[in-house]
Amino acid sequence: MKATRRQFLIAAGLLPLVRPLRAAGERVVIVGGGWGGLSAASHLRRLAPEIDVTLVDRQTAFASFALSNRWLVDHGASNIETRDYAAVAANWGYRFVQASVDSIDRAQRTVTTSTGRLPYDWLILAPGIRENYAAWQVDDPKAVADLRQRHSGAMLNAAELPALKKRLAGFKGGDMLMTIPPAPYRCPPAPYERAMLIAWWLKTQKIPGKLVIIDPNPMMPAFRSILLDRFKAQITYLDHASVRQVDAARKTVTTDTDDIRFDEALICPPQEAADLLWQAGLIRRDDGGNATGWADQGGLGFRSVADERVFIIGDAAGLVSPLFGHYPKTGHVANRMGAIVARQIAASVSGKTFPALLPESVCHVVSSVEPLEYTRIDTSYRQRGDGFLMQQVKQTREPNPAGEDVAWAEAMYRDFLRP
Ligand SMILES: Cc1cc2nc3c(=O)[nH]c(=O)nc-3n(C[C@H](O)[C@H](O)[C@H](O)COP(=O)(O)OP(=O)(O)OC[C@H]3O[C@@H](n4cnc5c(N)ncnc54)[C@H](O)[C@@H]3O)c2cc1C
Image 1 (cartoon, rainbow, N blue to C red):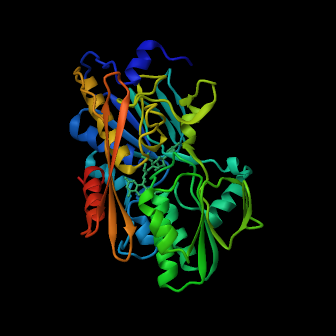
Image 2 (image 1 turned 180 degrees about the vertical axis):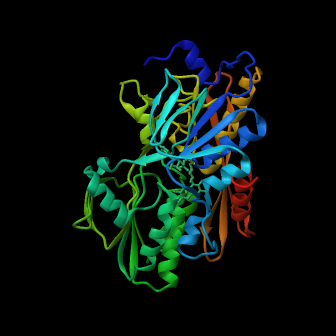
Image 3 (image 1 turned 135 degrees about the horizontal axis):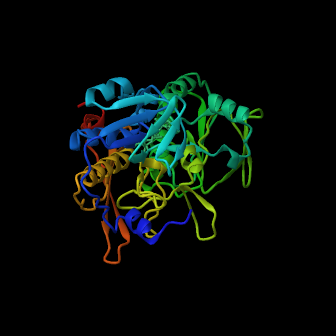
């Protein structure tokens, strides 16, 4: 479906959507109870209590990836945050429906779920990502399920983390393979932090094993010397290497140049926007008409280019600027997008205009274990005179960390989990 000029300008955030004052009772349906969807729901509750808000997720509970790398190897973090949706929704005062959203009828403004149809006036889509195993020649659903069960790198769903922790605990030695997805993928520093913590754990637990990393991207500079020098004995790093095929039965990954056998593996295939966005025809196409893999929404207001009643937030979001590409796929950005969309909807239903706001991201990564050191990554945005968005990334070493990551996570959870 081709977008009109007005739809395009609204989606880009360049034209405010001002509507006449409507009576209370407008309905917002939010699909996806991750960092983006939960943020939108809690902010809508605070900003516009008269709006009817329904959150739909196929799972029963939220589980967080934040601090999970430390938790996997018992380095400080004692648990991962999980929270039943029913309790979160009751606390904030919105409705939760546990169901899978199977389709969207944008003309009728309804979503069809596994438990029935839900009408909406505004739809917020925050369904996260899917993993593209077919890109690595694993396309039979049973083979995908088997690979995920035995060797998932647990980047899709934080509920998979306990199984990964168990697999790590059972690793007695040999080659542990870890693939890093091609960019863009969620939480850019996470694989490097995880690799460093696993290397530290192999070393301190005296496990006769090696972590073999296949990385198609340039390595994050903050990790270069620690991964390549300090943990030289624990890490084999294959730079700019692309996976072509995974053969779970033979425990072998084929790259452009080699067949690599593994004893254990954390397989993280290429990532894309979640299925629902493909099904709803909301994926961005490039100039050649090919699907980019990510959603088509504005960079300022996160409105779908195809439909001004639909917002797309979180990791599923696609290109926002030719200058830097995507917003980083982090929980922090997803949270800010949810808050921004909530403000737009609240303003629209009360007939007000809403000034464009841009997200930002803060990330505390463990960049050295002994001695303990964090790197704080601050990402901020501004709009250039010609309308293009610019990104500024600042990395600061924190040589004497004092629980900054835990304090950050607690502040985020207070915003959308605990009123
Ligand atoms: C190892 C790791 C560590 C990380 N650490 C951090 C960190 O420290 N800080 C940070 O900011 N970010 C971190 N992140 C990134 C962060 O987890 C993601 O950016 C965030 O989860 C994105 O939120 P989201 O709302 O877009 O998607 P998600 O959190 O994935 O939520 C999507 C939800 O949608 C639901 N859903 C999908 N499709 C449907 C459907 N059709 N019907 C019903 N429900 C559906 C899913 O069940 C899911 O609950 C980390 C990521 C990883 C992998």
